[in-house]
Amino acid sequence: MGKKRKVISVIVLAVLLLGGLSVTASAQSLKSLSKQLRDLGREFYIGAAVPSNLGGSDQNIVTTEFDIMTCENDMKIGTISPNRGQYNYSGGDRVVNLARQNNMLVHGHAFVWHKYNPGWVDGTKSMMEEYITAVGNHFKGQIWGWDVVNEAFHRDGTFRINAIGSNGQDGASVFGQRQGKQYIEDAFKIAHRVDPNARLIYNDYSISTLDAKFNGMYTAMKDYMQRGIPITGVGFQMHLNPDFTEAMARSFGEKLQKLADIGLESYITEMDGGAPNTSTSGLEAQGDIYYWITKVALDQPMFKVLQVWGIRDSQNWRINPDAPEDKAVAPLIFNDNGQKKPAYYGIQRAMQEKIEELSETPTPTPVPTAEPFDLGDCNHDNAINIVDALLIAQNYVSLPVQNFYQESADVNCNGAVDIVDALLIAQYYVNLVPAFQC
Ligand code: XIL
Image (cartoon, rainbow, N blue to C red; front, side):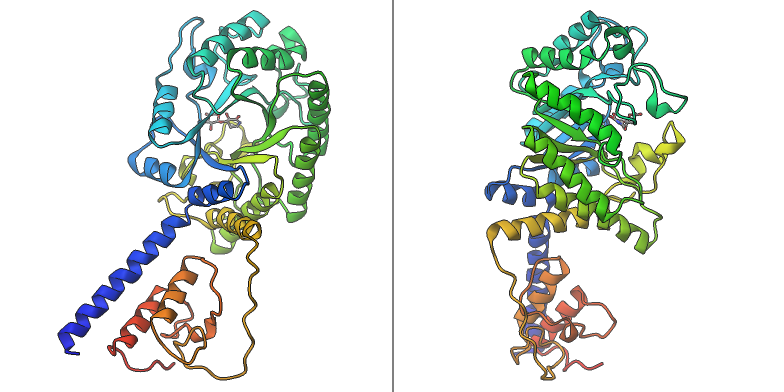
């Protein structure tokens, strides 16, 4: 083969290799993994909260990676109805349209909440009914599920009526003050009458970590279920801190099971778990938390949706929160530049593992061998060829590979097995580089 033809072959190979890589990488998007889970009978959706001004590259991330969106603020009463009887649906409609164009679902957030209410919100039943009816009717048929009541319990598990102490997390609810705890079940009944096909969700924070709060909430939910109040499931907000442990994830799984046992679905509605710091190890520790949570959640068949609360770290509310106790470092799964973080890969890995488990593909153990193999012979078949290059490429994009020996793959001996090694093997295969040696 002439030199010119060899060069052309290498270019063609490199293009094929990289082309194959990009196909493989996009095939591994969170959205494609959730589709695979659903195809295997595991109903599950992956989602994110979106701002009203969703920029082009964020829109690209959202439509590539997610199945479901929540308006971060555009379906809250303060945005929709700053004045009684006036309704502004523009932000919410934009998100609903984007979802429709991209075959995505929309999660509505939230009808009744004690926070960020405009002055006209007096907490009476008639006011609550008027608002839920108007907004529920406007979005009827477009909403997969509504957060009907948000954050109705104090941290000690009692109903949020008046404030306890001066901690903002235990502030008062004007709905509780005007109607007592009765407003919670009434809100669900009204929402069900308005949009009977939407899932109706009770949503709250710290219910995965504070047992007292979970137990108070659970006792109320059990009572509602026994009395036929139309509630579909419980949303866990998951504004976690870096001290979250694997044991806490297991305890979260037990809570999901308790809810499943009384017929309730569960969801993660607003995940943004802070990192200890932004060093490599800090972000990896955060990735572990995302992995544990996703793993435990996917093990519960009644758990249906995992949503992160925003796209890029820099956009998350916890970077600059109203209350200091909400502050967090880099809490999301994409960094400020929109690149995937270990937290992203933590979710991805847990999803891939569930897919493998459901597909019942036993992971073959590589046959141990004492023979010294040549650098570049990544599958130890005594040949250095394009299969070895492809194995490296697959391993590089975190696809499970069989008979892959890392020690033979780092052909440029720089301590990393990456795409450069794959390209070097492709070049070696067409005689453009001599044998490898460290
Ligand atoms: C936050 C938004 O992210 C901020 O942009 C806004 O200023 C305040 O609300 N629990 C909830 C969400 O239910 O609605 C909150 O969202 C975060 C805490």
